[in-house]
Length: 241
Image (cartoon, rainbow, N blue to C red):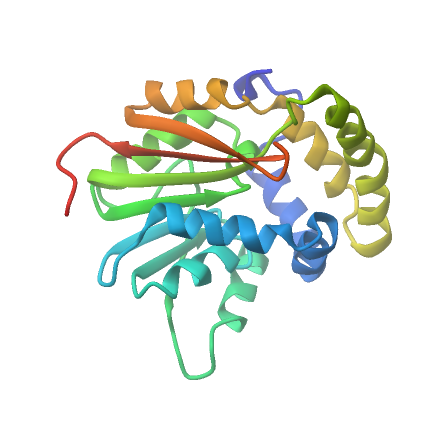
């Protein structure tokens, strides 16, 4: 289903309030519900981005900063941006003592407060399915990338293998929301999660949207039996190195 016709409430107010509510237990539930695979996914995304020392990159919808901090280990300058302040404030607490590796920014994916061509790369981890207008968000990302700049997106997906899809959907629809309600003060977010994944364009559907926004070489890689996809592309123009 096309995210732009979503029946879910993806207004800025609703999404901001939902993530503010889950912020205190967000990292715990990420590790628990993914079996710590989320750490490996973010490492894979950082390697795919290939940020180099001195480059400036944007981690959009940064949440509590795990992806941004992973990228920062490369020596790149990382702007960690989100429009949910309780999530963004947790990002700062994760930085090593005495070190400020990240520049934090309050930013809405639909209207980024950055000049055209500022970033050598942009990552979004598990955030684009929450935006009210996917195509506008992709267009904004394209605008703030420099020519030749890279985009890397992590997002949940439905497994292709029929034998596994049924098991996964049972877990996703039945077990995950129950665990979320037990452990999070805003457990309803973990009912929203599977619904938002089911409505998000899958694999070729999303790479087509990337292409429509102007990205070249759009491709995807399935991870963890197809439950997550790693998407990548670049803005047309000269590529450094």
